[in-house]
Length: 122
Image (tube, rainbow, N blue to C red; front, side, top):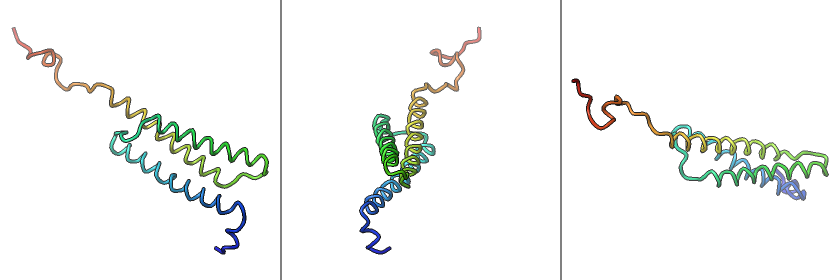
């Protein structure tokens, strides 16, 4: 790539934005896979993920607003959409795994034994 191409006013910022979105776009699916594999959603809260989701939605809406005046949709818009879907999946996984961890485990012991003793045969 020639340096003259990077001299175009909007190309370098959009290229750097795309690199950032690609890096985050790789991280979120990996986090989702880790949660699916371990069955745990530890390390970040749902509020944190919801704030990030709002940020991606705002970024996508900003690109749509820009497209209305420029009459062209920037390619990075689709990276925002992809990341938004991935972060939303992460939020759903966090919610689901948190609910599963709060559900009391079913006992494998018979009811008579869990009631405080062994069943007597009289």
